Image (cartoon, rainbow, N blue to C red; front, side):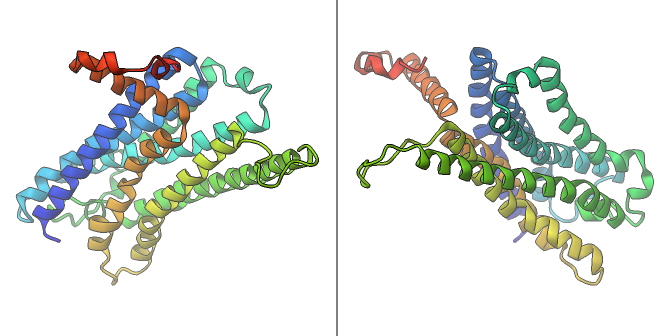
Length: 315
């Protein structure tokens, strides 16, 4: 894949990420304003971080289109790579926060809103961003994490020491990811218990062809988190695992695979997150539908005459 082709792919991917997440941010802001739900605040933070993922990678498009002869000063490259890493790390940490929020809402439904008060929500949202900024801009403060033999080609592995990559992946990402898997396993266990209780309380003599009950909101939320985890693992795991292999095997030149393929696969997670929430969360889906209806009415007034009143029952 040439630099021009990779630059075009980055430009298209960045545009899609920003467009989809912008719609999600607008819908979530409207929902938070109406409902004041803490869980929606965390999803809003996730959409914002994913939007900035698309915004920051646009800075790489010009360099890719300029060709390999384009030289970038080291300090400018360090700041650029840190700025790209920061929203990606914030997105990863916020995904874990969303999972913990669902776990808390399911395990402590009566105390959830007392626990998730205003200051706690602000701390929970600001914590992942502060941690992401600290990890991402650590090479700016600690110059030993910067590559001494920088050649002017601005890439993550060309400007940062392998030690920094090892610290980021082994100290921050993998432990947090294992905690994330723990909460996910606990959610699966709780969901299976709920389904078992529903079946035990089902009326005797109900025909087998008829479902005993509709899926509960907890089950729907669990399904959303499960799909989110699957997309997250599929998107980012190859990049992190191959990065560790590259650090352990200095003779293995895997930089092109990491930076042109696996990293792009990880960035695609920022495109998948709003699509998952927009499809699986009913309130977000309906809010986006309402926004589309309002815009269509504003652009095409005759369209309003053909609308059914039921289209606005969810307002």
